[in-house]
Image (cartoon, rainbow, N blue to C red; front, side, top):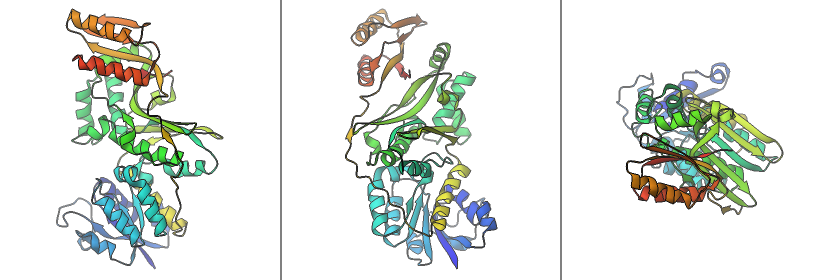
Length: 412
């Protein structure tokens, strides 16, 4: 009997999935006696010229052709965007079909409904590829949770921003130049907002922390601050301090309250995360019994993400289509960023004497023991230990006076 699969989307990830399964690029599909194939592929334009060699007769433009095909048991969703993919996932599960996706936006926003729908219809809903690319973090997290209470998640969850900060640090490039280079190499989209403003990271942190803490934490409740304002000057100053700037996600569970942040963080050069460069990710999870575990690998890309998608397919096959159950029923409180604190690095552009005095007066309301340097109309300040909320309030007050700045917390 042939196991038939429907594939939604034939972009970068979709083509990678097709190659592994139908072109038998993966070892399992080359060696197995089972007949497993993608029998229909949903695309916007069936007549479009493609470099991928694919039989034109399996291309469809109407999702109903896949949904109503009783021979298709599993649907892989790699279109991207919120709609119509979210609706297609629900309809597929209502039809009794297992669903696999790489769509972090849909999973982070609607995971509670998706889990309930999969349970009601006795099907699997799997999403390993939505976080960490080729790093099997979702599967590992679920295994660890069978014994441990996860108390902390921390790491680099976005390859694009890590590539940008790495190149700025190692090659002395400005932000805009490095961003253009990342776009040329395909690491960054034409519109890089999701990456450099933190939405991609907060969606991934939403998924990981929701699973780890047993409560649906929506992406829009997570504090996030991007890296648009960082300059070569900042990277040079931080390097002279003996530190490295990284873009981190961090979630903590403590006494029934969760705390989360996505922001630039200054780390010692000896820190493990400081040595994760270019498009690579590192994810750290801490359990109350196992302690800290770290997972390293490529966080994005065609092959890494397609590998994770197909891994979910093999999970379904090897577990004989028996669905797993994920519960998000722990009553937790949102502590936002109130548990985070540290010294802060501020770099401000100062053009006039009045601005200099205004800045020092504002900062003195929050921090008195400051390290201060002034050079070429740039003011550098390292504060004493501040609560994250206070540091953000200070930054907003400075910005309200039209003072251009960049700031980051120094991890102790």
